[in-house]
Image 1 (cartoon, helix red, strand yellow):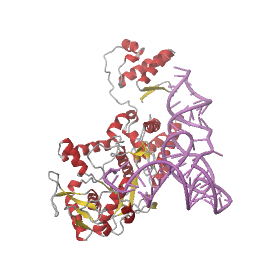
Image 2: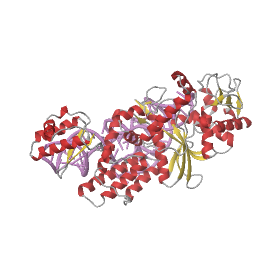
Image 3: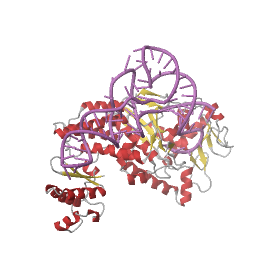
Image 4: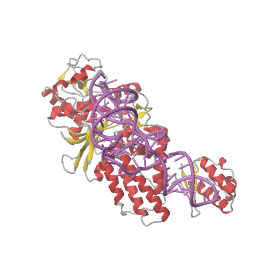
Length: 483
RNA sequence: GGCUGCGUAGCAAAAUGGUUAUGCAUCGGUUUGCAAAACCGCGUACGCCGGUUCGAUUCCGGCCGCAGCCUCCA
């Protein structure tokens, strides 16, 4: 299979260092706020990558870190007047809840910066011993970028250009403006850990170097994250890790594109972000996941209600195809579709094409259902299993269409009462449960039998107002679903 | 200014040196009491200008436009 490698700027045939085994590290969240759709993209993209590797039979170790100490966390905790650990725990919990909703499987290891302090200190000490890092005039420890000759190889930058475009205020404590902090001295009252250089905390970049090599070894296969981490974060990670170990750090660098709003990057600093928590109120999480996978992971992804609505309609089409089909364990699979799907995924995880295979499969399944063909179960099972690789289509269709709520009545009503009520459903409370919908459906079927089209249409229209869609079938039965 | 990347039909989004992407929307048909869903049919799109080629949306060059990074950000 081929994967686009940021380091070489081209698709390369992927070869794990150890046959059959893959180590993958992805930069995770800094937990001082809720996850937004941009974070969702990273989670979903690399979850899909992980699922596919495992499907291909690789033994994958997937590590995704949590940054649970940094300036923003300290500031936010101070604003709230709470312990930073209380703050981070709250947002870690919220993140895990978002992940579960999006069917993002947990990574194998989820290291936290605050639990990796010894490894961080050890790596900084090595860098100082090797002459790649120094203690600045303010006591902070800095990485000496000019000492690392291949600095800039990932982002395609060179030191001269960087200096020419310098727009950071020069920190007097540094020897060179491009040098970055490895260990930051604590101000009074700030969270801190003891180190050979005094009480302080790790810089942002060092934690990822320490945690990744700690969990996966000095040299591993894949490192991922958002595009914006290419520089300086990942560049600095390379400098730190390769500087400290003297070995190649990572073979393949994968970066996902941004989520945009009105053609601008969605980001915390621009304030144009939508949190998952909020979006989930309006759209099912699976719709969000589908929306993300409908574009290639390296392309920009424009966020809008229109896009989400279309994703919902599209996904509904797939669930409609799966509706009313019995599934059998160990059903035969349709190889042709599996092959087309795999071919797409083998080409740098081309999920839009993989999804198009799902739609072709759905069309054939719909035809098979109409014709009552023999291969209905195989088609449906294949569709579901391929969907599973993308983390979609795993709900029971009754659940997707909102037909799985309680079966008993909420109201004490006679049939007479129901017949009266059916004539003016606008009086019926919103969010009718299963039993009541079934009841009204029956009343409508009776109306149809006696060719009382007016009443039948009225019931259908009124229910539509409530987001309940009735569909008559050729065999005279009626099915319903929630929008 | 430097460095990346992008520009595809109404919208979204892929592949591809000559052959159907796909989804949504629209239109026509089948079906239906009418709908809905489903099925069938319908789209000659590839920023502009040159070049290479028998042939370019696809390769090369220039231009224009957009985005990202160069400061915390997935």
